[in-house]
Image (tube, rainbow, N blue to C red):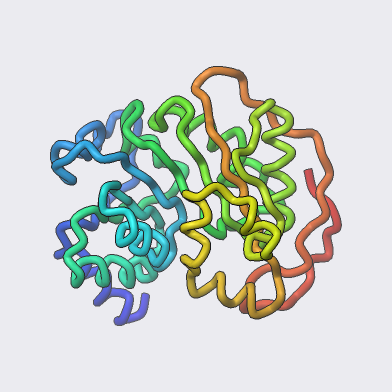
Amino acid sequence: MSKNKLAKFAEMATYPHVFQPESLPSNEDIFPLKGHWHSDFFHNDHPITLELGCGRGEYTVELARRFPDKNFIGVDIKGARMWTGATESLREGLPNVAFLRTRIEFIAHFFDTDEVSEIWLTFSDPQMKMPTKRLTSSYFLQRYRSFLCDGGRIHVKTDSHFLYTYTDALLKENHLLPLCATTDLYSDETAATLPPDIYSLLHIRTYYEEQWLSRGIPIKFLSFALPHDGELREPDIEIEMDSYRSYARNKRSSLTTSR
């Protein structure tokens, strides 16, 4: 680990709004703020929104700036990246922001029933070879149900045609109607049809999102409500793989489809 990363970890350990559990949680572990985020940290009853896989925290911080009547928590395992948003929000004195460093598969250990109102998934890894690791899979949606309010919203913003197609198919398989769905978020035609609360978020663009746009890759967006009831099933569908893997690598995948 580089000295720069170690310095960032050490600095974040002093931040009052950053939580970095020293070990991975087990079924017996009880995170102190689980069920108490409103009363013991935010000291209000405003709705809580999570950004899962927040990276540098740009989206979390900008949402907090625009919506002071809501609370926002950025979650990621990459602490060195998270440092950027954590530091910026601390310097600005934003009272409605927190950051949690953990793996998303353990997210249910940190929040209690109905404690979260919304989830943002911004440019998640599409996990084309590993269905259970996709953050919109039934595997993860079932975990979100343990702490998301009944009918709470999930917003998916992605460059990945694969992840968009997969998520859209999963919604159809489970008879979940999207509140908003577009394969080109920033087109004039799309902007004219977006709900006002979504339209107001159009110009929150992260560093990596700008890179996708500069390459001519349209941004896809899905928003849907997740009810507590009903069995969740995986779609039986073959999906064409994305022809790229990341901004830094132009190598094309040798695979063509995946379930």
